[in-house]
Length: 609
Image 1: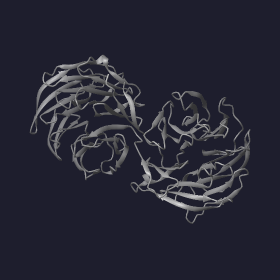
Image 2: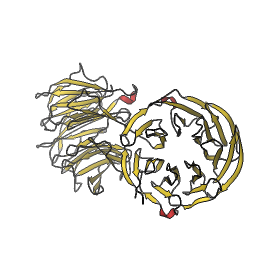
Image 3: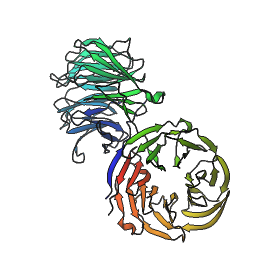
Image 4: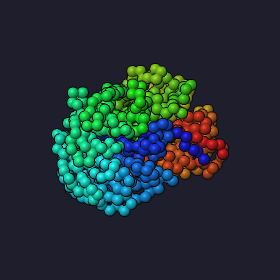
């Protein structure tokens, strides 16, 4: 059975002009964030240790560990909170419909018995507190007129709840049962985050008016403001206290994180400013932070997580990044050092080193959205949603200037001749285009609708798949294509064609969930009845020794077949990616990497049967 050896996780879903609230569990040093419909659990000491909870039906907004670390409560945009265990396959304890709109924040009480949640109420209440086991409401929360962005539970008795939101207010409640005590009207813009210090003596609110204010924890009396002289120059999105309650970190749209020393009387002075630029664009705005044990972590709008050592802040941070969207392309660079290239359709190309993980991002502003990508040894070729194909040379770990070619129609598939890498075959709706370096050799109208293509490593032969499920084989000489034969077996449009590395076979797959392996010489079917997916096949990959073939499908499965054995003796990875598998490549004969809709890349180790 294939086993999961590594996961390169997706990054938190971010939104311009909003903070995101990440949280952690100090005992195990795990932290949580939300991406689309998944909650991602990662470890600060070992970032490759990732697990994903994907049971929500709607995009998840916030997730928190209970104080004892045994349970996690996660909330989504439909107003539902699920409470599930951190062990035994994340068993569900309870599910409550708490608000009628999106939930933006939730907090546990220190005894783990109560949960307070806040968000958008669509005309009904914006805040609710309830018992974690029965869901019965404890107290009523009025006093807000617009969406409530954040809430905090005082960690020591007597319990208090503070909420803040888009009506520029912070409201203070006493209880339980909780009732309204007073409104704090010190901010002049959205109040984005409120947090109690771990000892319960103070709380801080931060706002889009660039102010942070510290209050007394029990009475809600204002103590002091963060000094504005060396304060933030943009909206402050989030704040997090140090475990000893003596310092607080704030992150802002001015692309910096600031660490403040909070004295006993609540007055603050700036300790350090952390600024980290990746691109210099808006992607560097910081939208989330977390201070956990000896780690300090910030999240930027581009999704990059920077891990600082809280004891030694001058040390440069460890950057963790990944994809936020569907990872549509996964390729292995043909080099001595194994390196994976992955790209998602929003134009982010990331390289990963097996065993190490994230190894850098290619800032690919030069080619916008990406739909297709093929990698050779010294260059990659990409195509987007316009009529252009870009050829980009690789210089060490960086891209050279891209050469763009307009081929006059939107590319459907692209294939490189590995042995003569300047030759490429591009499929368009009506036929194919032969490309040599950045000049078009010829555009051939084939007279049928083309959906996929492949060119042999030596560039002498091309296979073109059509909407009608037929495979047309052409010999290529110079700039002309001559049809040699037509193969009929598929009952749906061809989605992918790949030559085996030793060129004795080729494989094709279609939208009707079938894959076929053909013998190259005789054009006979070599492996039959590969009909074990339940939805269209998106990708396939050969192992370097041409012995194994893997297919990935919309049905979330990866299936590995062995040449020379019947298709029924397959190995299946079920639920490899939530929402479907879109990229697949063998790293070596024993390991296969897959990518998919959930933005993650997973490495599977195949044990020989």
